[in-house]
Length: 138
Length: 155
Image 1 (cartoon, rainbow over the protein chains, first blue to last red):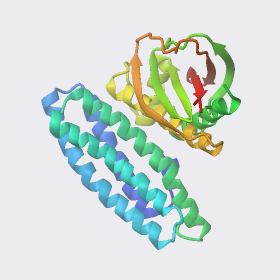
Image 2: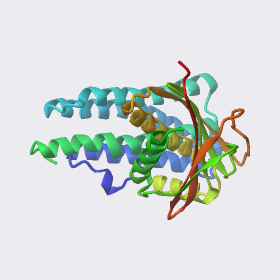
Image 3: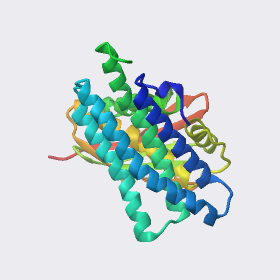
Image 4: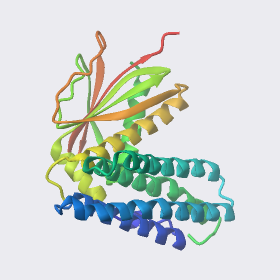
């Protein structure tokens, strides 16, 4: 799933992005595999727990970096992070209330993939461009 | 219907496609249609509210949908399941959201209603007496269309 064009040129953030893409990709492969549902369910639960936690860690780190370089779009970026977290939490709630059903999990997987590509491929690129323009690491 | 409605969707589609699937769709045709019907394998329908009101319908063939999913996820698939249809719906949702941002620059404040996705269902979304514009786009992985029926709110 990861493509080099998603790199923003800031090592810490790129490494975290790669980890996120890897986890989402593993998750999608599990969800889409022909394995029986009981076996898949463990991996699905594990990924949900990981995503909830890692996304917060990553967004915090990314926001701290934006602050450090005086990134002017930081407030908009924080809003985008909030929406992303809300999107995940909506599904966490659905799974808590309705249990894990295969169709909902596939639906979540489709959205998660699109959100991740769009966020990293577009919004995060602008951080890299700004850092570069300021003679930073990128 | 004004050209800027169409242009907003065209620009947003090109940008999102380039970013998400690495493809730059080209305009093939633009025509007036009497009926807005989902005639392709996969359809995404979104409502628009605010200064402009109406419906947007994206129609994608099956092979193109699966190729888009392959490019994004790295997974080969042979049918459009809930994962693929959800991802496709989200791509159309992101395009429409970006089109709304472009329309806002032309002083139209609009919102979109979350997408509905229909796989292999052929339905009509025409509002009585309303014509729509159909924008046909070509790409190396197939041809798709965006049907736009928008009306300015009566003041």
